[in-house]
Amino acid sequence: MNREQPFDVGAVRDVIAARRHMPGAMLPILHGIQDVIGFVPADAVPMIADALNVSRAEVHGVISFYHHFRQQPAGKHVIQVCRAEACQSVGSEALARDAEKLLGCAFHETTPDGQFTLEPVYCLGLCACGPNVVVDGELHARVGTDKLNRLLQAKRGAP
Image 1 (tube, rainbow, N blue to C red):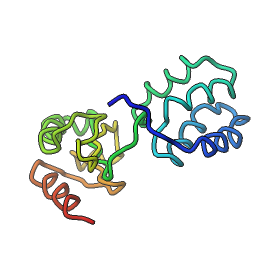
Image 2: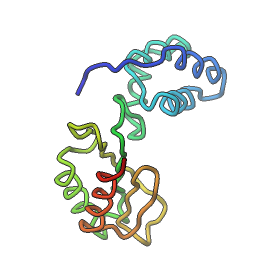
Image 3: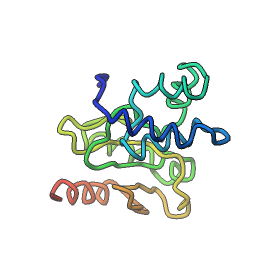
């Protein structure tokens, strides 16, 4: 999916204006835009570059380097599966494959109905209780395929 989504240009300008003079301003600006809009639109990249006097490639490089930043709007529900080594050692790679099958989309994608976005995360700080997932900001530990399926079904039935 590579079509540009409409966004509030004024909100982007406000975030940039409020944070452009901070030390290391690019990350605070990107976080602020994603917090306000839900993603970092491609059309915001030149605005950020101009404000910080850096190239568009630099801004894009930061966005694409950090898995946290979305370049498209997320689905109604965001599912994050920990891909860090501690969770891998207790089955998160199999859980990741199962999540893709259960949702019918890959990481960094949204289901065709717009209900779920699947994202990787690289440590949730609950290493002793993996594999871990976050569903709409709520952390779940010791998640296997059955538990993940129940969590997804609960969200499918939610209004």
